[in-house]
Image (cartoon, rainbow, N blue to C red; front, side):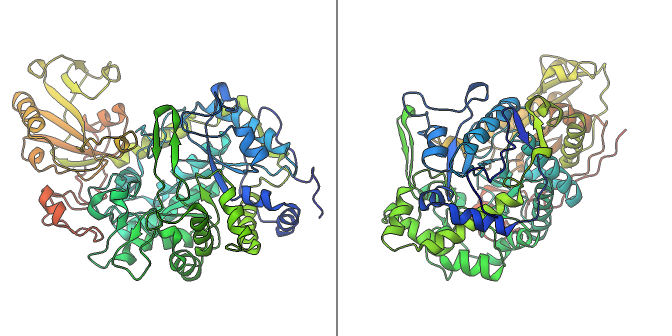
Length: 600
């Protein structure tokens, strides 16, 4: 097969959304396309550029030459820089995403070879809108956080959920999921715990494998991260920041953290993202994992047998400018800060990396090739991998029979069947820690905090003060220490203890009226002072108000189990080893704890 300008089929009509199941790979088509690509086109295919969806689904083409985040205009990226992988950075409405995706397809179809663009996104299905770790909103079905899926302990449910996620992503024109996280939640202070599948290596591996299978069965490329395990962050600091540049292994449990990634590879995951952190105390160079050949080639490719795409976490070649905010975020090349961008690129490709996340400048790669630091044959190896992925996703084939109109997107996203599945997952994730469900009728007077009173219309009578109530239901969140800095504010780290004033306030309510306290456990909070109160205590991981209400009022069974230990004190957390599961002394509640409440 000889490919010409029109050889990549153009079934990407204006106002269309591709929806494809994974396909077998036509290696002849991949090899023919690779032979036709110029060096500049090859390098462009190894960049994963950030973009935003413009108003009403238009291509963002720049205002005064730059976005608030320093992104380049979309047309420049695709047409001039030959970028064929974009990461969407804003949670636009799904109909806008579909229109935007159609415009991107038309733009790509008009390039020399017509190579389709693959579009990636961080998680978009959660309840928590935190731009630093996920994107909620936009009209997708709302799910519990991954840590909540772990509380269900149900691999089949997780696979079903992931399949639904994948079907909605493809309906909106997205092809690559920058998830799941296969990291273990062994360091309770870490700000990314909510994105993990908990503390138990075996359970996490089972659920990660199920998630990968569900996503990829629905035609989406899963990206498992942060290889070989980002959980044992020193002191719980996050690797986005230099103070969190290292993972540590005082308990010698590196293999525990590797295990869920091995499960993902066994399940057929097609993408792996190494972590930012540099390991301390291991027989590896103290550089970010992506820079270490013995990690990427030796461990991931040779030992685990992975032959898919390795994409770096974002901005480990260059930093990131936020011009309208007057900020410049430093490069996250831990252990390689003294190297220049060309040297970093050379080290990454030598290690075995294929794509550069968050990068849109081809010059360092071209310079590394020109200087003889990266052979063209090595570039071809990575380009072949990314083209094979596009072929597997059906992007290189004639997909005319799988194109749906933008107007049909609403019939594929957040449909009743998806919402019912999400509700089932939310309900199954609720963990009862103390006490029993309350008997609440439409005439029961209730005082609530953190609950939309409109949800309770016809279910209870909402009053303004605890003194007026028969029952109080309070929704609170695990504590964290507020950080300074725009990016830092999105990472909820630090102490896990509730302020004494907050405990006293809740105690006063509990003395006045029978009280239910629901804690959003995005991290493993120290609940010891709350558990000492005469309250009903519940842990949740991202559930809607009405789902919680059904549980605490006896309208639905509660069967969830903790996905991690809940420490008894902050001193126990500080004394524990970051890499060792279940290492806090005398935990208040063990991983797997959870009362069973039957529905009334």
